[in-house]
Length: 54
Image (tube, rainbow, N blue to C red; front, side, top):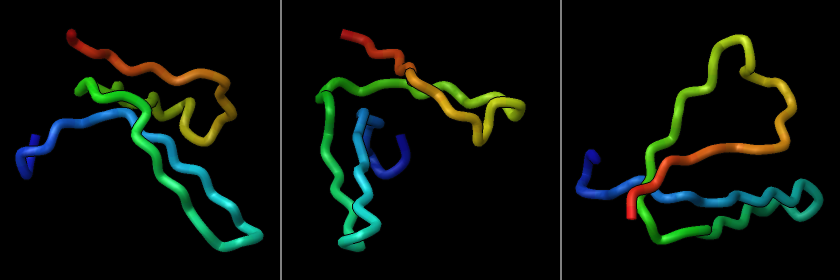
């Protein structure tokens, strides 16, 4: 990883009414995030996937 940091899963929650964004780390394990196909960009999704090594 660039900068010596490994990718980890994080959740961002926006509150438009308050004008705030909250960030929380969901897991300590480093992971690989797959690329979203161009035909799927911007479409609604219920699930996301990340590959982790133990």
